[in-house]
Length: 116
Image 1 (spheres, rainbow, N blue to C red):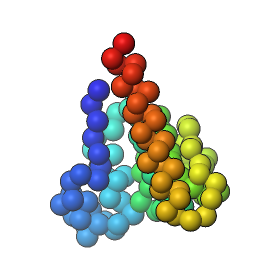
Image 2: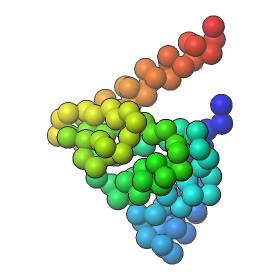
Image 3: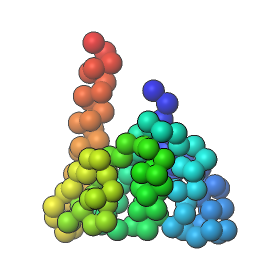
Image 4: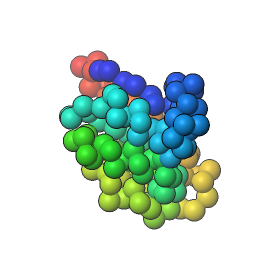
C-alpha cells in the first residue's frame, strides 16, 4: 500500500503557501500526485478549512474516493466526502481526540486483515 502524507514536505507546503496562497497547499500537491481510484483521507475539525475544501474539490474532479474526519456539523466537508466521519461536538480538543481514537481503530482493523 503506497501512502503519502501531504503534510510531510514542509518546504513544498511553504512554497505553495507563499506563491499561491495557504488554501492551495494540499490541492497543488494532489494535482501532481493523485490518480483516479486513489483514496484521500482529509481532516478538518471545523469542516470549513479552505485548504482542505480545495483539496476535496480537486479529489472529486480527479475521481478519488474521499474519507473525511471532521467535527461540529460537518461543515462544507459533509457533502464533499464519500464517507464523512463527523464528531458532533463543539470543543476542538474533543473532536481531535475522537479523530485519533478512530484512526487507531481503523489502523487496527487494517492491520488485523493484513495479518490474516
